[in-house]
Length: 88
Image 1: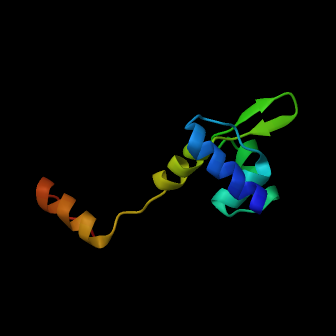
Image 2: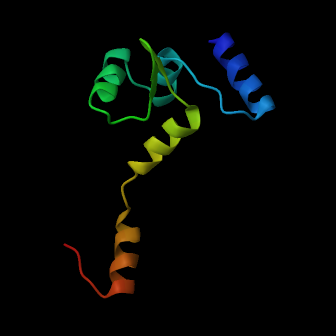
């Protein structure tokens, strides 16, 4: 875990886009390795492959998580009010 923290710290300092391993990706998205392999196989998660090795980018994983955000009731009501549509 401390090596992962060092990795994140060095990535922050260098401000470069460094690839991360599947183990690090599992930690970031809080999913088990078999689940991540399934998401890769179904092409549902951003990833890169070089030979047999999988790579991920932390910022892409965080963006992927953010894309799954569901609107709150308040956000839905605001959209309905602006567009004049009603949702049930």
